[in-house]
Length: 223
Image (cartoon, rainbow, N blue to C red; front, side, top):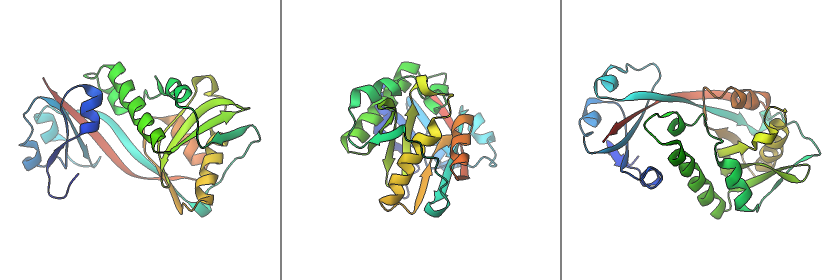
């Protein structure tokens, strides 16, 4: 959000949703007064703040995000010889893993958004990060197992192939990537996940991450 702007168009979401999309700087009266044009609106607010004005203006709850964080010296990796990564993976297998992998995402939880469009949003994001060379391809016993996209020390997008979920493998795969990011100079590792995503919370906690900065996400759609 640009300094001083109360509401901004979000081109990324416009392209994915096929309609105008906007984000508010806050849930104050001045920002809410600018909502009116047709489109999809997002606002992120302190969980302890009153939501009365949001409800009165047609906004509805979608998600609570939380930030895992871990100083490099506190990382507790769990390496495994079968867990590895590729720095220049092929995109197609990762897109296949990406599809239907983000059930906890706020656009998948928004009943006003077609799940296929929510999938497209993540697939487009993955393709852009891949083109910028910011995606690790995860492999288990030599086969594709998932991906972690990063920007500096932040893990911005990640998914595990559904064939490998529930097997306790993620901690080994995440360990390999986190250790590599630290070796390449990351002083702190962070991410952003839904507070409802219990497997991800457990994964990060097991690797030595703490949690901070919870934020509630509200949406509104004006036809």
